[in-house]
Length: 221
Image 1 (tube, rainbow, N blue to C red):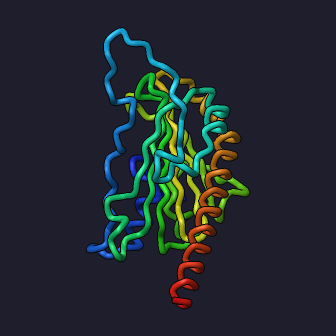
Image 2 (image 1 turned 90 degrees about the vertical axis):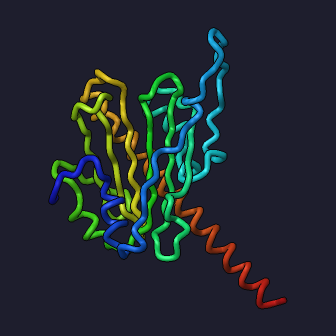
Image 3 (image 1 turned 120 degrees about the vertical axis):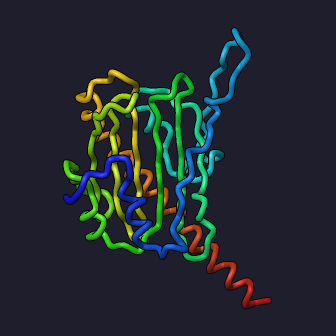
């Protein structure tokens, strides 16, 4: 493991390395979620169903039931989208998602899915010091718990590489959360990550099938 760049996920480092200066993707700020919308004073808040499919971006890859089960939280709001440079000709594909409970800024979950020309070997070389390897997730995978003073509690970071795509997931807990509690979530988040990877692969297969069908229709016209 080489260097510790905690504030910058490996996904962004490799996406940048895969592009020219002109095609460098710019990471946009997290999209505002419904938690930022103010409600009338004293008005009771009704339960809101978390619809990750409607949130777009990388959100449909996340299984909300698994997320709530692993964390013991009730996540209710999600917002996702592509990166600013996602539609540029030479830029890697980017998808994002941010999920919150609506009760406070934390806990929250963020997910980044970014295409890269880098290999799994390069991905592993770029990982920060202190990361732990994960078996059975992608071609290369890691996890690490950050305990730096950021105004929030400890954060579980988990990432993996699969077939030219990098996934970076970060679960940030409320202030004063015991780091040992977050360490105990590794197995659960690994299962969540495997579900994300499977959903992403299924989406790629559907997209590929749709392209083949479209090409076939074009030839028959």
